[in-house]
Amino acid sequence: MVSYNADNTRNFYDAYGSIEWDRLEATAYGRLKAIIHSDFIGRYVASGDRVLDAGSGPGRFSIAAAERGARVTVLDLSLSQLQIAEEKIGQAGLMENVKGFVHGDITDLSRFTDGCFDAVICYGGALSYVRERRHEAAAELVRVVRPGGTILISVMSRYGASLNLVRRPSIPLLKDAEGWNVWGVVEDGDLDGFPSVQVNMRHPPMHLFTSGELRDFLPGCDVLEIAGSNVTSFEGSTSLEEVSEDDDAWSTAIKLERELNGRPGLVDTGSHIIMAARRTA
Image 1 (tube, rainbow, N blue to C red):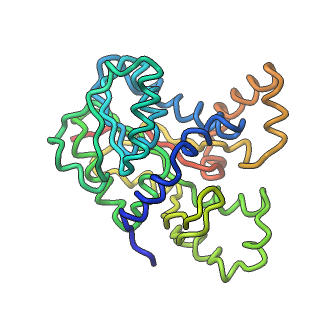
Image 2: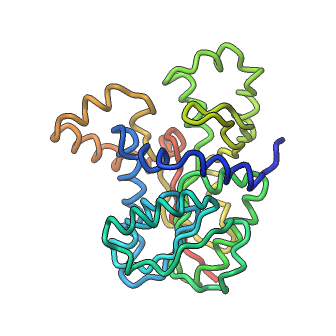
């Protein structure tokens, strides 16, 4: 298994740049993902909350928290992503809601004292990319939130990624399942790096989660809610683009996603799994 390498992940996202922001706006699939992730922030982040956005990327969900009146600390491994986050938050007119921008790694939050945040957000790939150090990162996220505080995390879905091999389809991977370790990923969720189509680099290795694994992932926490993201669609879907062109149809599609993504049979079928948890002690 390829181990977590912070430098490699940092370099990738420095090169990835604004693509990370654009990908949740450029397609209906991306916009739906942003809506569903923001729904959790709307339910669990309140005005005045001290919030850490750990692994913030370009700041999309820092903005969502700040719009609710939270006081947000923005942390990411990539300086490029932090710079974009500062730019986007400034453009949104929300800089007064930001406590600071921190260049850091979610596996080591020692600069923050125990229980200093009311809520922690860790969305997208951050917990997947730290691979074998994911339990260290989980312990740190729990440590810095106060007892009774909320943690919102999302991770890449093991079964959703596997299903997408056929949904998209990914013919080369399906033709050489052994060479691409398709069955190993289904079994243990560990996916080694692969060539990126957006930048001339290898995508960092990652760990893909199941919802069952995620339920026991945060020590000393009770699960409040768990759902999939994009359980009603798949990346590259032209049909979803057609739906999004009609306001009434798009509204129904969003409502359908919200209605179905917490159903037990569907949680694991999307791109990501989102969980809200409360620290109990």
